[in-house]
Length: 377
Image (tube, rainbow, N blue to C red; front, side, top):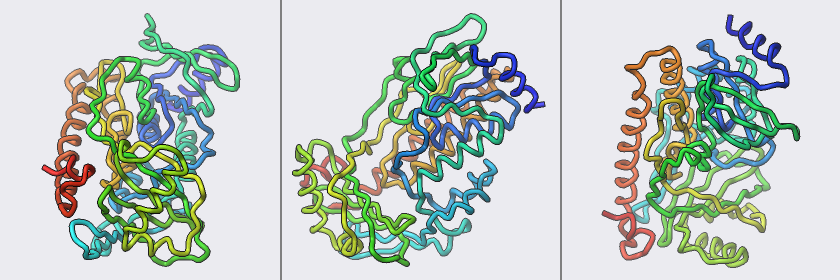
């Protein structure tokens, strides 16, 4: 019945206005997770994605507890087939000069994972398409308006051709841009100024140590992890106003801060960093509302997380799963459940902010440093 409904939508409307129960803006993990479950529930769903999943994407680490989420989406077997790199745990220097380890050996879910994000996101989109979701790649959105019959009309440009799409419900999964929330003039609370100076580093040897390395220094902290294909990602996390201006000065500062570490510089001694760096926003931000009558926000569009949590992709998938249940119930007319996703998100944010403050307060060696002073309570 589901497949027949989707075929009829395509056949009747053709290249004219597309009519869907749900339109998802953004084809990352959060949007795809929601779309898979909504299609499974019998709804017609489309995703609008800016890219063709060709460029490098940052966000590589999954904790062991990702396994039941991937199983609930029916993608676990495919995930294993893609040969992502198992992670045995974490090694960290934080709060003292002593190195500590947190192994996953006792986790009931097994190991963690270092991803090839490009392969991960592309695979999810392929699975969504197999479930009946229509994925529009390399597509941009021109405008949003409310419609008298269907609640939303969205104009898009795909393959240099403009089309209209109509939907009863929209899901904002556009990441930090949160384009729909911005259109709806929803405010975003910014909690800090954290950014990451990221380098992808090629190694001339295959490492057997696939743990994640984290190390605090006076002006911020470091993250380093092995990736598939003999690569590392190394990121120095600091506040935007503490970073010098200009690419050459930033590169020099990155290397200067690397020299202050114990763990990270040893991990990178055989690698050769590319001359350029990627500077990425990594601050915690929270939408004042993630749910309205006919739209909601998921993943980074709702809440952006400090990479210290290592929960960005996990939260993206979890929020997509939670949102799908709420959207399905709303479209089924179950009025009493309309606030469930909003309440779930509020509880998540409360717990996340509490845990984040707790971890930053473990580090008091540089209490007068601007970076740490802003975070100590």
